[in-house]
Image (cartoon, rainbow over all chains, first blue to last red; front, side):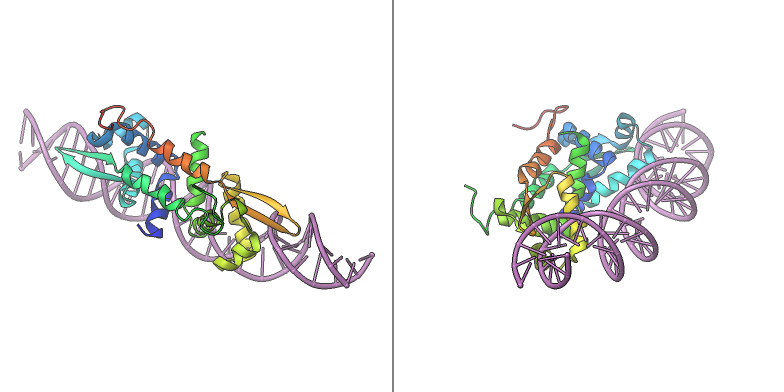
Length: 99
Length: 99
DNA sequence: GATATGATTCGATAATTCTCGAATTATGGA
DNA sequence: TCCATAATTCGAGAATTATCGAATCATATC
């Protein structure tokens, strides 16, 4: 994962609506949730939600599949975990301290 | 840690210069680095760096202490770790899946 | 006190981001 | 085919953010 990917993931999550969407998707697990239900639960206008979902998707934090008329979004939280790994990489490499 | 604190931390890290600063500070560990040295190593103008350091500081991701004329910054990466905890909290609570 | 160094603050500009209304695409059923 | 539902795309406006030059503040030394 490149620096730009990390920044995209952080930026995607650093916004109120998207953070709430991501956390909602995390509670849903692999089953995911249809866009309409997300919009309803979080009281976000459908078009605005689309904007945010596409952000999460292009940051690799969510994926979509279609079921009939519905588009089901689910969280890729392995990627979220990868972010912190990147942040604390090389901890104290200049001045050893950590176990 | 409140949602707004999480967003502040994510936003602070979701920017090229600040992400590089934070990672540099992580390598330095508790010893930290003076602002001037950070500016030099990352080739960021001192005033621009101040702007970014104050962001990291107010997001709780860095702390400062003075040593003579120098201000020494160091990373609070416990807070960075807290962020991911928040992100994956309540994983699959609607549709159990995780161990 | 005067001077130099390390760093921050201020003000302005350029760029990015969020939100909303209107229009559009895609699927399923009558 | 026609209609309804689910969701996205487009375009514009308001707000936020990043960067830079100039000026200022704080500490140490002469």
